[in-house]
Image 1 (cartoon, rainbow, N blue to C red):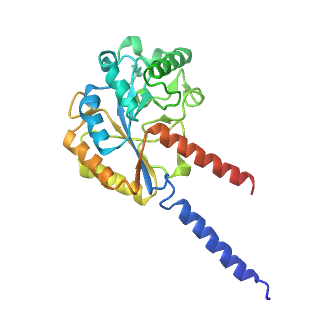
Image 2 (image 1 turned 90 degrees about the horizontal axis):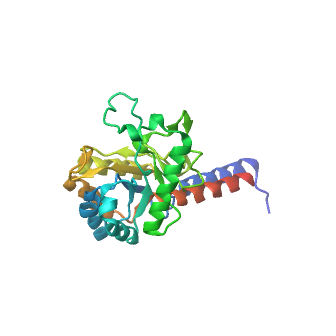
Image 3 (image 1 turned 45 degrees about the vertical axis):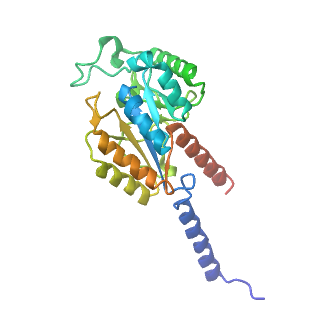
Length: 276
């Protein structure tokens, strides 16, 4: 029996490499799907309970709701938020008081009591961890994700990213980008702000992520009203219908579920690389 010569070995190794890359970038990358979509809703609005949650539930889609501890709807409709969590949605941490930096241009609306530019790191971490305790008292869960308020990741000139790594499974930022699974930075996950886009435009964004075998995260505030950053309810629902119709290829999940999946995938790759 003849031994395999050098050139043939090279060709076989190339074929194996191509197959491995194809599988990595194929339909099984995202929990058996071509891409992943995270629907996130900020600030604990009434429309999230009245308009968004029923539509999600009727379609069997799961989402993440980032709720500040001082949201009026949390105080007034605690049982509704508890029911939302029981239905499989994530209650994400958005701090106790949603502080934002008041020393930036156009930030006259920032409450001086919750001006992030005057916060110490200790105060910020204390409020974030108290918010976790509050949310756990509602949903009983110990694993969740965080969303930086106003997208601001710095306190006292220091990054929050590493400070909260033991408190969450991931954190959402506001840099608009899609990410292949190996590109996801667990405590600075990119996301697209939704403000006035059509359903067709949102669907086109998912289609691109689908072609790139990537994760795309949407940030919603108002849906059909209640916030200056708003999307029309009908346009929002066009996106949900599309996601439902294409659920075989598109994985729609909470940020926590996606973050845990990405973390496990990245750790398995690191272990493989460590044995090379």
